[in-house]
Amino acid sequence: MSNPGSYTYTYEDRETAKLRRSADAFRYSAAMEHLAEMKRDRPEQYDQMNPLSRISLGHYEIAKAAAVQLGRSVSAPTDREA
Image (tube, rainbow, N blue to C red; front, side, top):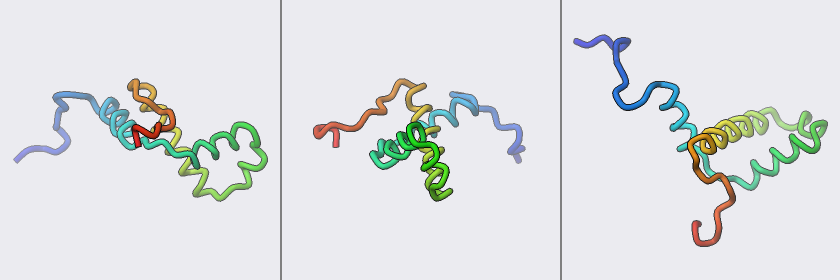
């Protein structure tokens, strides 16, 4: 019987695995990019938004940052990529 707390990662540590999972979850979204622009350019309007939208944007930004850190493309897909 093994101890679940004694599991050792063989290929990547926990932080690397978390970063990779976040990057894997990233999918470009024009709507989220629009919210990010609003947050940057019109903070007073952003502050009045639905909290769920702000939370979703936070998750999107974390996943996007992880993708950038791992060298993945975060730009809008072209017609050939879709």
